[in-house]
Amino acid sequence: MKQTIRVSVNGRLYEEDVEPRLLLSHFLRENLGLTGTHVGCVVGECGACSVLLDGKVVKSCLHFAVQADGREVTTVEGLAKNGELNPVQEAFVKNYAFQCGYCTPGMVITSYALLQHNPNPSEEEIRKALAGNLCMCTGYVQIVEAVKEAARGSKNG
Ligand code: FES
Ligand code: FES
Image 1 (cartoon, protein in one colour):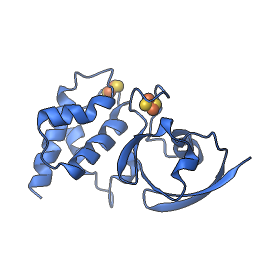
Image 2 (tube, helix red, strand yellow; image 1 turned 90 degrees about the vertical axis):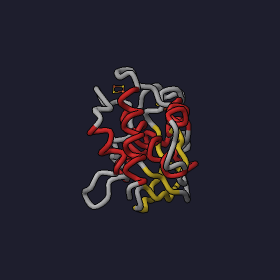
Image 3 (cartoon, protein in one colour; image 1 turned 60 degrees about the vertical axis):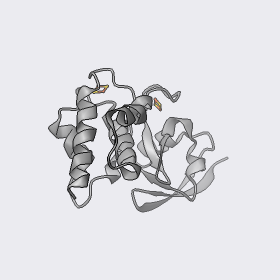
Image 4 (cartoon, protein in one colour; image 1 turned 135 degrees about the vertical axis):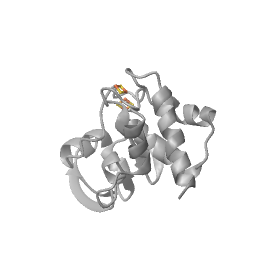
């Protein structure tokens, strides 16, 4: 039987009737059309589906949509403001930190969350934070460089 949930996603409140087994990742993509959140492994390994739930990174394939009831979700679509990319997104573009781009939304969300609570991470801290996000294309070097650059940018204001 469907359940009504109220979820704030990227600052907008949605009220939807969902099956209790509907995954948060599928809810975001299929019910709300927010296809920036990618779905890869669906078993919590790849991190492509990473979003923020009440400000903390979670793998949305490991959560049911009903678990987001009354909570706040931020997806990669929610990072740009007034048509301007978030500095993390800009740094990914500038540093060529993607190839196919499949992992990129998850990488960006996780990097954004890292910089929110640690604006000056060491390379080790960046790599540790991104350990749950897999990239099949790059050697991670450009991704780490992008996060470093975004961190420098956030320090410069
Ligand atoms: S799709 Fe969720 S971790 Fe891979
Ligand atoms: S850029 Fe292709 S999986 Fe990361």
